[in-house]
Length: 128
Length: 322
Image (cartoon, rainbow over the protein chains, first blue to last red):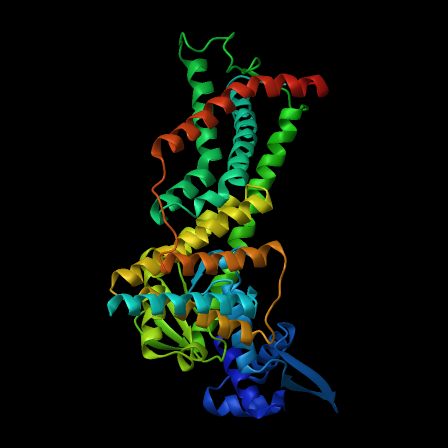
């Protein structure tokens, strides 16, 4: 997913405002960075098509709302870029500290913890 | 019917395709039979072996093609029309033949793999760019992502960047964070993201279960190499191991319910973590790879592939005509 500068700003604005129509968004950005109503309309359309905004008609105009919250979008991005090398090819591009770590069960992890603790104890006894 | 120089080129490509399939089968057999033994090899040796295995079919293609081209242009007593390694219609190539079909399949698959990898790379770059814009720069190549998900990873081929989430920083001590940062810096220093991507391209030419096995072993070797670099700075192995398990637990809890996955991938996953922990605790006795055996395997793969070309050629011609 690629977002342009204005798309990121509009998304940020809607995360704060929760809901707005194109005129409200334009009124805000006209003051802070200029631009035309058409540009804002196109940006809102793009974000809608990328699945980041939802919209419904109120009178003659669409009201836009963020479909995903900021933390959800970041979580999606992290998941996508760190998808594991074994199951998805994307993960061939990153080297994660704890790869494939969500595929364990608690019992297995507890067993490993016990093993580490036993080693610590052994080292302590060896130092005495 | 094509004749002359172009026919020689197309025949060599047909020979290369058959060689690739034969050597791929040989490597797949070795990986299937011996993969479990790889974990007992020293990390650096294991990496070399994995690179040799994944590139062996291409190496065999290169050697066999040279062996077929050379005697065609130069007189050589070793190679003649009666030798085992020969192709009986080097200067003519029938377009409507099984050779053409194998070439079309081979080139289509190569194009598919490369296009797929490039599309994946572009998608990844775009997502990473967006993620970076939502991150706070801590150091020159280290970024903090504001997210409760506990995660740390390194990406980038030439300009490498390490990412850590606020989720991982909030739930770890200063010592644990130091381990995480140094582990990620080790991945960056070794150019692991680029190497992983190149490795995944080569492994894409194997059957999926063989490719996954090869990638699993390379992932494990890369992680152990990064762990080793952290240990070499004087950090306690038990602290590195406990940090690793702690992050795994945080991740599992963050997935809203621990995944009780019984499929092959999950089993591989637990093996990676277990192997890293055993390795850190000194419970694995790693030995260097046997160089002679490795060399012999490569040589035998090349020679057998070369000697099998004529046999495969005649076998196919009993079913299909030129």
